[in-house]
Image (tube, rainbow, N blue to C red):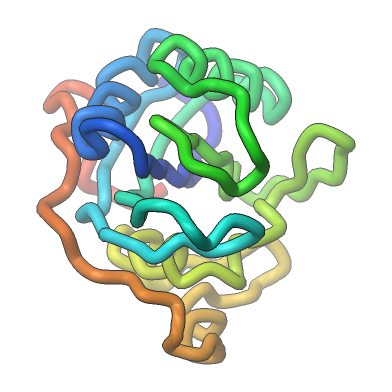
Length: 177
């Protein structure tokens, strides 16, 4: 499979959180996304507009896809819906959230999405699992994710919760692209 290597962020804070994240990993190939590797899972404090809610389980996935950015966004949002995400308050509780964080070196500003994700360099719950996958990772334009993490205050709680999500052997690869 050709295409671009990218980074997806997964999150869940309702129901069986790990099962929801694993279901997303298992179903992504059906929508044209090859999952290459998963980070560990992290239990994280809510951030954003709704702080009074259960903690999240988060992970990052290294993926490869031939989908263009908006088609990828449509595919992951459709998958969220199929796996139980209901419409709700922005930053509110959810069974599953899938964010497109990076897609190769693409930079995109569109009313429906931005690449890199606008919160990529400001969220510990994204940076820590992303750096677990590749400590040398940079955003388009050269900003090092490790430098962004080092510059953040440590108040946003991110705790290791468990091993990486299971990736089907035939889809994974150990090399960097």
